Image (cartoon, rainbow, N blue to C red; front, side, top):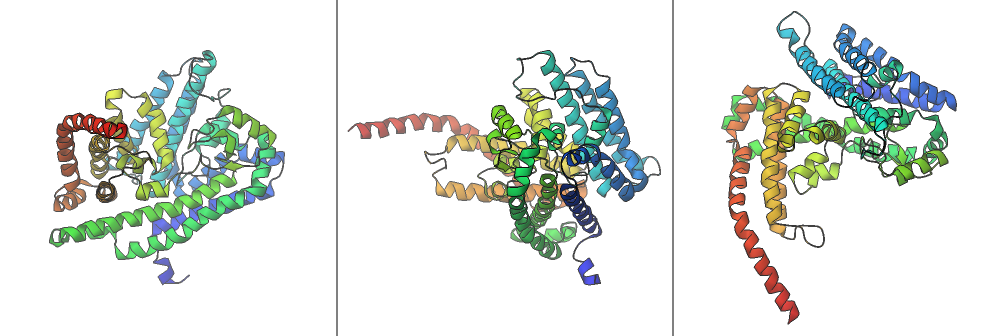
Length: 484
């Protein structure tokens, strides 16, 4: 490989490309070399050992950072009370997050390498899996002890063994890149009762799952390489930004976010291919699966699962809705389409369990804390509630019509533009990370997004009562005209 070809990607990008490429090739070998019951044995008992070995080879002794999370979680689960669905998961949640913070800052107090790059990625995924596993086990214990009292349609039929928890926590699929998937989805992927279904899917659906994802890779990867060269992030780390025009700063921020999105689109297209190759996230169409949650129609799931349904989809593992991210009508919808597995994790284990009054702020805070303790993360994530609050009021004033769209074309164009540039603005904080660089760029743009959203919220809140009184009169006039 020539030096010029190597320079197309950074060292970290080449490492992640190697991780994804190696995992994809390994998944292909496992899928097509192992047959019958041996396939399910391999899928069930080997992924943790493969993942741990790969992490050890890549990270060296830094893999030690992740081991206490795995040990504490598994021992907490195995020693939890049979009917305990609250204390044990909450304990795991708090302890794992405190440990995550400690390991991130350990290098500041003793002479150890910083938890960064691939080591940090592993720590993030292990954190999600450990906390998700603890809550799922706690919920299933409650459901089994109190049949008929839960709204959950599926739960774990028994507590997992140490071996199964190890294989889940260190499963090589998504270990460094995501997406997140639940322990139940892992169990479903190696359920030999679904052998007929999985074989039908392999014969008829696997190529289709590959095709659209590889097409996504084919356009996102070149755009990433080109835009990354033309608009490097370091361009925003200089005092030169104060010399730029506001228009150029908006354009540069837009392109920096394009670079980030294309990197993610390319990486997740391959990562999802690995998942579907290993049966993770594949369910019958009749089961109406959702991301991370899996089947929501239990009857349709059971019928198609054991009878060998011929139609299936991978919605449970699809981590991004590109159309929704790129062109949805608001901040909230755009966020929901991005990194759906982590969004669902936050919804299941934070938002739905937090006090109602503080759900949004607490969820954004935990999301920022999970990503890292950089000021830029918190600045970006904590702007989100400002945007959604203003958006909620605005959407009440401009409701959707009978066609499901807001009929005011000017409004739709204006808000989509504001929402898109708003995401660009927040992305710069997420990417620049530290306070100094984020504040430099945001102040050069006059902190336009939070200022705009705060003003918009108070103005719209003030005029909302007046608009509500006018609307019924307009509707009465409309009805009178129809009567005549």
